[in-house]
Amino acid sequence: MGYQRFPAPDVLTDVIHHVWLVDSAPLPSLRQEILIPNGRPGLAIALADPGTRHDPVTGAEWPNAASVFGIMTRPQVIGQVGTSSYAGVEFTPWGLAALGLPALVDEVRQLADWLGPDTTAGLVAELRSEPFGPARAERLAGFLAARATATAVPPIVAEAVRAIDELRGQVAVADVVRRCGTSYSTLYRVFRKYVGIGPKQYAEIIRYYHFVGGLLGGPADAAARLSALHGYYDQAHAARDFKRYTGVSATSFLAVQNGIAALMHGRSVQDG
Image 1 (cartoon, rainbow, N blue to C red):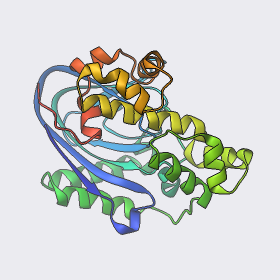
Image 2 (cartoon, rainbow, N blue to C red; image 1 turned 30 degrees about the vertical axis):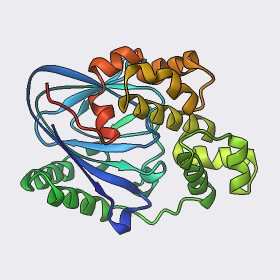
Image 3 (cartoon, rainbow, N blue to C red; image 1 turned 60 degrees about the vertical axis):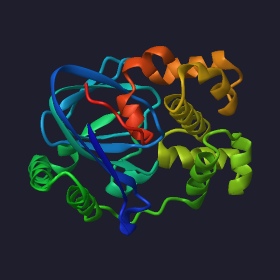
Image 4 (spheres, one colour; image 1 turned 180 degrees about the vertical axis):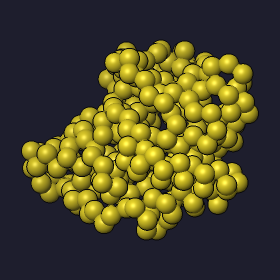
């Protein structure tokens, strides 16, 4: 599987964290992967055979053709068969506002509903015309830059996200409130408006995301050590969060269903 990640251009650094591209050999049968929450909304555009996104909690399913998805508080299952080729972006936690979209949570919206079917089809054709690599990423970033508005996020939201991200979610909300120089009620209200969830839940998601990254980087029996490193009360607490955000046990996840998670954490993935 080919995976490339590119930093956002300067004009989009407050909106986009990075642009990503994926290309893989044709899959003869259905392959399913778990997409774990990471505290960021995103955009994914299929340039070959579109897959599906499935919410195992509600049973809702969406085509993974050209869609914008909000911050997730629970896992989604990505299904793919045939040729997999995608271009997408990972937004900043508040990045959807710059595109005139609400702070979506556990929700997927089709790109055509936002841009219109003709504009969406035109974008797909433009991306297909570029080879896999920087030119394709630049084309997608340029398209979004032309449509982004100057929506300034309140400084306390950016500072709260920074405080939580820097400590990988291992921070008390009271400490975040003090760092932002505001009250809890004000931080919660503004943070929820622009991000879609509260700062405590955001910190829980970020802590979990880095916990998974640690598991991917080491042997399965490292779970007990990692639970302490990532601020969990004990291994059982870590296991409960793992099941909550991933939908399966750590053993199952590490064995067969962690390809997308590995890509998100910058690790290589084998096709098959």
